[in-house]
Length: 316
Figure 1: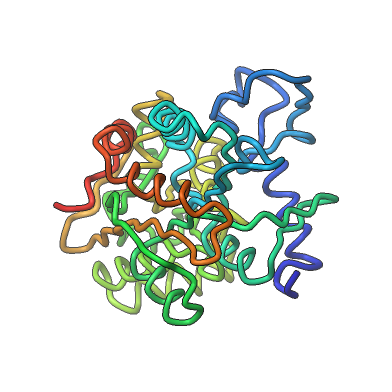
Figure 2: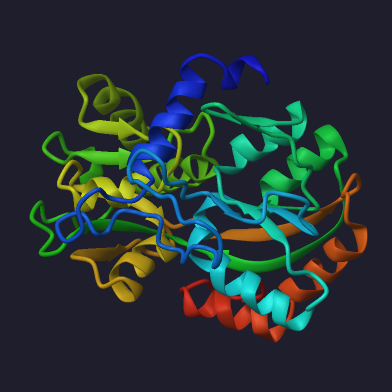
């Protein structure tokens, strides 16, 4: 593993995925904690949240017929999407998916493995998904991808607790000293660049500096440890007052899970909309499966699932 995933990286990965991103030890008060996807059927079920529960590794890790590295913000889509893919292509029943931040997934491809606690995962992906701009950068740097397809778009929004107790009206309010902000860490989260671009649209460099420097130093801006999914959880737990997120994360919490949050819409002239791209890797171990999955991502079945979870079509 590279030095970025050793030492504190490894500890942060383990701590965040097994605590902040895993199931809750008590239903009811904390029943909003992930994982939200249904577990695989069969076998012995051994899950003791928050110590032994994994939210971002999905499906069959032994001898998969298809391995997909999904940008982590699409975790809510994975179960429905994989089941629909298996129905359309019944020859593929062992599918393994990771929904970690794309910066981590890219490092995993580059270094050849991921270490999570005592587990080493050395599977090579057939498919990698990320924002279109980031995919172009990776292709220019590494020449990893054989072919690509754009499949969805997603604007930004602000998530606040139900009732909006701090009366957040827009991005400028995130610069207020009394508003605790949860912000994706720009070291490994592509969404952070999009949000910072929106800060500059809404309030110039001064707003970006206030949220990302001044408030980080005084503790009123929290930078996520490993995954931007920490932000919705912090709002739900009362640890942050506002969180800029992909609109689908606010939609998922509010409309799908009916959690006590509200969405503050960011005006189009201040917003940034990401286009998501899926790519087949040149080194894909399962070439035909990868080709079939790319075709599936553009199908009406896949598009309907993305619409269900609030994503916009790739073409406006």
